[in-house]
Length: 466
Image 1: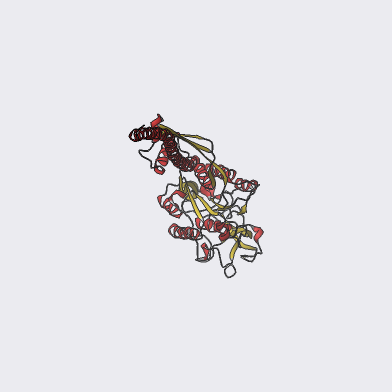
Image 2: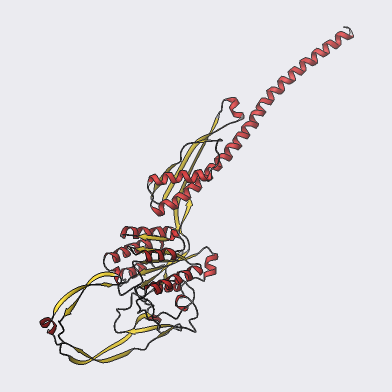
């Protein structure tokens, strides 16, 4: 073989080897490219799947809070779910997703969504898309830590069906949140009319001065029995009591003056638990009891005093018993209920059952007042601390100041206007609430129950339970 022939053979062999190597490399490269492509597509798929799940979890929590609190319809829930999901997920063009499916059952909201994501390298082998699917279930759990004062209007206008409606709504609220086996949530009850009753058991405590019992004596003069019936005509006229229209009656005697029969009379007055307002600004504050004590006043009967305050407790039975015994009496002065509601939440006297505010807040605890009233302020304070003036404007001004004091102390304030038509009072209660969402216009008994339920749900934790 000549040298030239040898080089030709070697060159041919090299060309063959290069072709073989290229073929072998191509055979090895294709799987490597596929593996890399699969990894990239799977990574993209995992990333997209996680984002869809996050958006669905967000929507489930939002829908659960809104729908279970406000009792939304299935149609509204479906629309809200899609809106919340879309607002959290911005992957337009990189996925094809079907509409979110929303379902509600008892205290749970479940959402699901499915669709697909186009592939890259995988499409070479015919895998054009990868499925995307997510499910999220949000459910109400145990209540968060809270101390809540129920400040309840028990004035005369709450007589009858309103009283029954309040009893039902308050009991449902207690059942929803209060567990005797847990001190996570405790509640106080502060009934009010024109006064509050701090409880006669507090007599003798350092923050309280009580008038001594006394017997008043006088001469009582009146017409002889039966004189009016023989000489006068009974007539009726329109009147109001605690802002509620009524029919009153009186004798019309045509100028005749009855003879007088006089005899000694007396009345023994004792303390039934009612207290005056302290002087401004301490009337709406929770401090300085050593220098300005609360004053208890004596009366001839227990009529002026509503049912006594129930301090913070997790004894659901005791709370419901107190609700059942709420006494309906007298006129309305809202600030006294608000101020004493705030005092039941504190850790110092007059009521010491509350947790110290700063440490309670640091541990995630919430303090709140739920005020329910069915009418305008019909009484206002006089200079001696008694609530005997008829001055709605003055009482409204103090109400607003009391609300501001409560909120300045970090206490959430919820207000319920129950069957109130007076716009001035409703506007005041709306302004008093911590936010517009904390105000409820309950125009009937069912809406009163819904308002209490709505407020209660705000103290229950919502978590993803999928």
